[in-house]
Image (cartoon, rainbow, N blue to C red; front, side, top):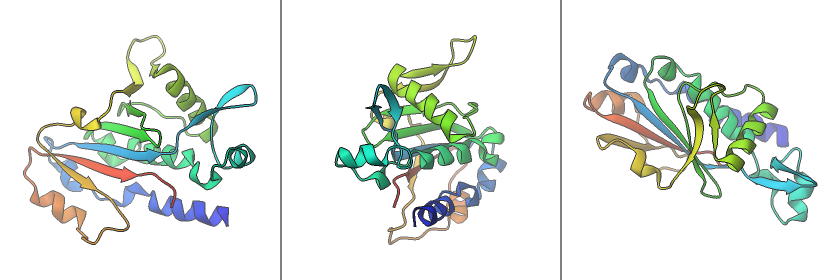
Length: 197
């Protein structure tokens, strides 16, 4: 059952299906992604702090009256990888990527960051980020991942269109037609919820 839910979630998370060709062809346009409700919570399990997940910490979560199904940091991992690996980012059109956790912690992921491919390594990086508030490049002072102040709207460009994705929306819009109809100087802000359904 849990495996089927993960497969279904991967289908929903396939962000590559969105065709951003209109944005790539117009160099003045860019995209900003905001991931809301990411399940990235740190807790002390035994003697160490760990990033909570439903597979490794199910008993711990149940003991603390929490639903293990709500703790899916792998969803955030896959979503971040999908955006950073996208043709949009490779074309240099990804302006920013922001992630907001369930607890309200907001952090920025720089578009040129190479996020670890394995979940285990990703969880170590996120644990370090949430404890130290930033991850810097080796040998440099540049912050690759950094916890920033809320609200995220203060970091968005003035001329931008905000687009929310939802499975329960009553209004359905073809994203290609919508992007094509907007003027060239507008940046797009895509907001997605990463909560497991």
